[in-house]
Image (cartoon, one colour):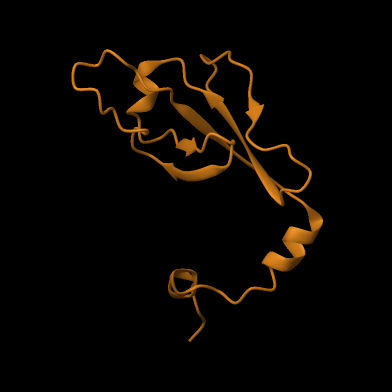
Amino acid sequence: MDHHERTEPRVVATIPALPMSILIYKISRREVTSDPNHVKTVFDRNGYGLYFSCSPMPFQRDLDKTVEPTYYKHLGFYGYRKGFRLTCVSFAPGTIQWRSTPRMT
């Protein structure tokens, strides 16, 4: 977390039935929203994470900027339940993962 940010982190999803969760906090400094070194996240109204981006999101749709969107920063921490981790490691590598993995020749 930025040393300038003093907001309290919160867990996006703390429901026992969910297999994983992430930590985020509300961005209070406007310059952080456009800084690509800070990963922003959006989630649905139930608190389920949808995606991450280095770009500002949600996108500012109000052209006269009378309504400022709320931005959240992903702290980079993930929490996994044991069962999810055991299942996840059993999956075959995806195409992108396979292509980006160095191989011995």
